[in-house]
Image (cartoon, rainbow, N blue to C red; front, top):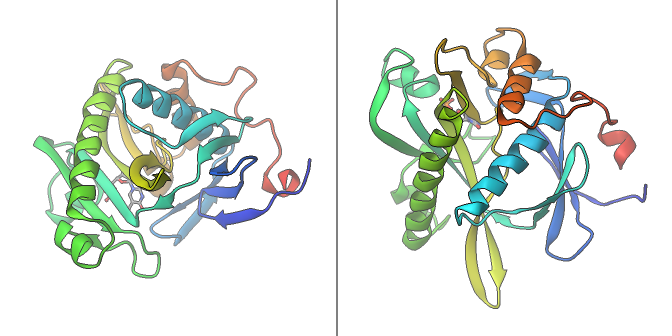
Length: 254
Ligand code: TMP
């Protein structure tokens, strides 16, 4: 395979130069981190599953009119996506109390929220992704008030749609994290959904048993992390038939 230029390496993905202008290749690794890299590990086959799961969800979201970066899947671990300028904000949408919200307010995990809560965090490993408000975002110029209106309304639509989609396969969407990017078309800037949507950045609980089917199994050393990701893919009807782990890692792909 021809050598490609690596543009960026994150904790779970690598971004390579794309085959055509305005595109990049998003490669999904099996590496897992938690607590801002303090905990590191490998979840065998995770990259293959997240590639498929994120594709599936982004295509469904595009069907309801949410603009996304997804262009097409290239192979088991790679997808072609639009090149964006990432807005340095993590948007977290919550439907049920869990994780850092449970900790911050000393509330039991599993308490349903009377309305969905949207939170913003500044994307900065050095600062440990501090929680921020729209005031910080606009004052520091990370996004304009108009951008934030759009991000908020897209995030709530995405939440409504995904809550229903997951409930249809017996899963409660507890919370999740989104990232948005800017693209420029004929001098016009547009915000589109970027990054990934997968069990790495969602909390997914079985509707009947509350069994965790997401990265909390890794964060909390609960075991069977691969099995949980596979179960999500299986219920979505997209479990790769040959099993999750059949193509080599990044080294041999470059
Ligand atoms: P939290 O409860 O730890 O704040 O996480 C809320 C949701 O956001 C959860 O579904 C996991 C996801 N998330 C990420 O994707 N990346 C992160 O860096 C963090 C802190 C959370």
